[in-house]
Image (cartoon, rainbow, N blue to C red):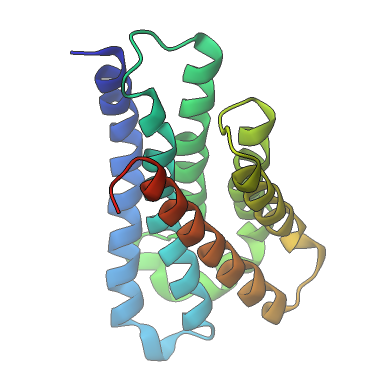
Amino acid sequence: MSVFEFTTVLFGFVVALGLARVLGGIADLIQFWHQLVNPYLFGIWFLLLVLLPIGWWTSIWRFSDSSSIPLQQLLSMFHVPVFMYIATRLLVPTESEFLAINKRYDSIRTPFAMCLGLPTIVSPAIGFMTGSSEMVYLIIVGSLQISLPLTNNRKYDYFVAASSVVVYVAFIVQYRAVIGHV
């Protein structure tokens, strides 16, 4: 087993826990769609939380041929799934509390935004990403995510969520082209 395989399996447990929670949240969202105040907003956030591991996976693929991974790179690889999982736990309530998601959202907006935005901004700063275009993408979307708590305007929440999804889709497509899996 290579170093890359070992670390991705280790990190895969954290990613799998987060994805399982999001997929359960999507099922609850479908079930309670008509009873929620902002179902589209939560749908977009849930979509982003499904796209994040895909983007993370494609971005770490460049380490697949490495015989060793420096500690700084290892830590930079690990901080993204950890913050992803925390963001997932904050946003997606347990099944019994799902109808209270609208009230919960107001109280978790700030920590949720920080869990999304900080690793997005920090990744380029610690050398996790190499391309200049991806650094621009990530810094812009991370700044938008961190600015989320500055206003209580739900339209801004929709804008940040949709912009994040668009940027992450572009990021995934760009990386998939780079690794040759178009």
